[in-house]
Length: 311
Image 1 (spheres, one colour):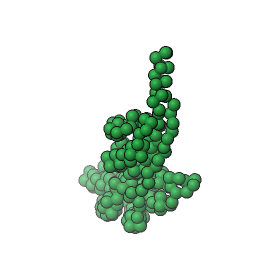
Image 2 (image 1 turned 45 degrees about the vertical axis):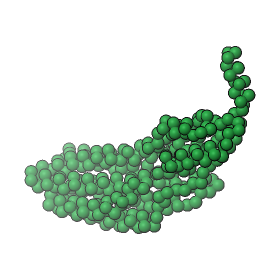
Image 3 (image 1 turned 180 degrees about the vertical axis):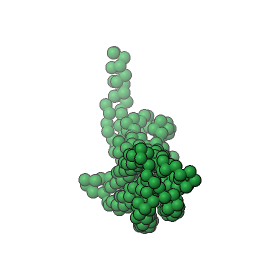
Image 4 (image 1 turned 45 degrees about the horizontal axis):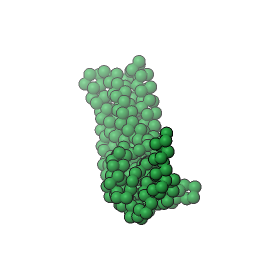
């Protein structure tokens, strides 16, 4: 009946590998983050501002996120082994997922403290709050500009950038809270702004958490259309049908594909394989492909038809 004829895997090249220059950028941003973390803790304690302390807590999470991202970038460069045949590409996905969940934890802590302060708003020194927040905003913008050119390279970098975006929002929120308190003397403005900051952190981190889980569950990448791939493969001359098509993500921008193709006895399987490989690589940017052919003989097909007719 069916004869499993060929199993072929194309050579695999992983684009966009992390570089020492990228790690240096992360190192500079980490140094800026740690420096301003100390400034915000002192400023929040002296002014009594929850917005500053909330942003400092977020900065602490950022320091951990940046450190984890740098470790993941290093681990990803380790070569494949007999027990890790795909290498360590998924280290960046694990780091991104952890960082996304850490953002949720930070948001929860901010909300908890904001609720407590809404019940009993403490006095806040608005001038000191605005001064520290302004310096923080400048530092966060510099950090964001340093990492933003790397933002599309990996999910890991995107997660780190989300932490920085949360910091920028936190600094802006602290500035607004300080301005409101300075103009009106209304102390609840500080915890209310912190609640909004927590909500924005949750919203912006949702995409990274969802995408990380999709990758770990080996779901079809969002930029891949299986129906379109099937339709394209159907145009390959000599290929009767395709089935068991699977596409999954090894790491950001690196996808793998497996597929079974049915060909007739006597078909030029080498030419069919070459055309399928070319089509998948050029049109869909799928270069890590495993293709298996099921060769069927004409008598076997006739026998199947006869059995179907008797039924």
